[in-house]
Each structure stands twice: as structure tokens, then as C-alpha cells.
Length: 115
Length: 113
Image (cartoon, rainbow over all chains, first blue to last red; front, side, top):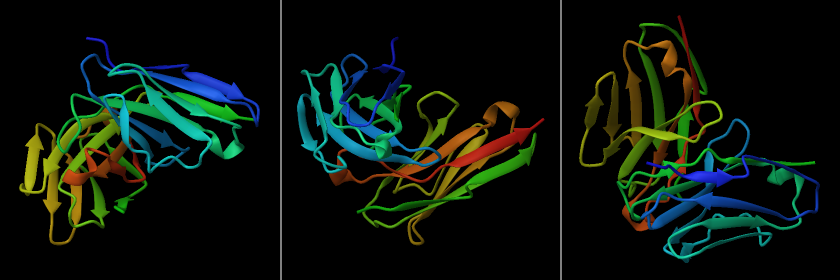
């Protein structure tokens, strides 16, 4: 079946512009996670959705970052007034439900480059 | 919060040799430890996991061991093959974190034919 998809696969933008990244989770998965992966580093948690509510936004680096989710479907991560330090791969994962032991299925990521 | 340290950062082995990657974690409440494999240009994929009530788990050529007292866990790959070459990440989470994973920094494994 279809896995997690993300778009665009690559995004190059100028400093100060806003960008919107999209994630389509596996159908029926209620939990959705966003992570950021800087070059040569591990994944950093950004935000978690259960359905369309976000119980944990603790990983969002600043108020320039926001995310929303439509029902138990698509999620968008928006970065306003992008900075060069925002350059990274943004990964989305979905899981049948939240909680320990539920496998997270990752998308291929969106590579964001801020010039 | 949880902190996960992973070593080594790079590992080079000959085909057929074994490879071991080690991780330590800081939060004694963590109770689930997955390992992910990430190939170039792809998202991470779960390869094996272990819960805190188990000391060892094996799946064909890969195994994971957990020492709760020392707060460390390790990935063991035997009879390595070139297709095992990838970046490997360990992670940890606990019941109150609804699955939010804290990742190690990753290990680049290269298996030479």
C-alpha cells in the first residue's frame, strides 16, 4: 500500500520568505509526527498530532514555525521568515496510534535550503 | 528531557564481519528503544526494537541488547553485506511521551565487499 508521502521533495528559498511543507500520512494512521534532520545529525522532534489536535508542540524551535492537520489526514508545516539555520531535511512520520511500541513510518522528507 | 548518545559516528567493516553500534540514554523512565536504518535520500525505516522488559531480541542477522541498569543498548549485525551500508539511528521513548522519539546522532556504516 501507499506509504507516507511528502511534498515538495526539494525546496530552495530565499531568506525571509515563507515556506509550506506537506505531509500525507498512511490512511487510517491517527498519529503524525514532524522531525527535523540537520546535515549529519540525528532527528529532532518538532511536533506531534493526535487526529487534528497537537498535544505536544514542544519541539518547535521558534514562533516562526507552525503546523496544522486536517482531521486524520494531510498535515502542513509552515516556516515564516525563513533563516539560513532552517536549512535541513524535514521528515514526517505517521503511526496507527500514538504510544510506545507503535511503529512510526517515515516519509522521504523535504530538503529545505535557505539561501 | 531525554538525551541519547550514539557511538561510533562512522564504522567501516569488511563483508562478513560483525558490526556493533552502542547507545546510552539518560531518562530511566524510557521503556522502548527502536533502531532505524536510513538509506540515501530516503526516510528512516524501523529494523528492530526492544522494550525495557526484555534484555535481548534477535531477528535473523540483527540483534539488540538492552542493559537497563547501565542505561545502554546496542545493535549487533552479523555476517554484514554491502547492502547493510546505511546510516543507523537508535532512539528512545517512554509511555508518557505518546511515541515521541529522541534519536541518537547516527552511525554511518560502510560494508566493503
